[in-house]
Image 1 (cartoon, rainbow, N blue to C red):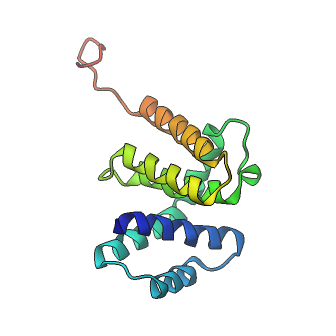
Image 2: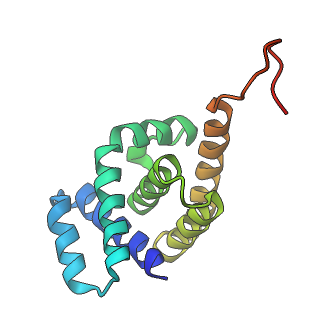
Length: 148
């Protein structure tokens, strides 16, 4: 449950950073002061926010590529920032099952977005996941055939 809250707070930080141009460090410190988290959840939150900000250009590039005709500026700011957290998690947090990442993002979208946000976030994440899976190298045998 504490990771769920940490993801929610990561979304809040990125949202403030994106829309309010609040320095993410300030937004993070404010939310940490207002919320009681375990030390593990604090570490998770800090890593998620710092990582998502550091990799935002790469994450945004994937979002633009896989959101099909939805430029970032046209996405609802809630959806855009929920997707940033989730795509960062998919790319850089191999310790978290893909299903957990998708479920958490969809739940945040349903809670904070509009009536279509859950479906939109789920669809974009599905496209990103399929795209990532195609890029992952498949081990091949000496004759060039995929290993089973």
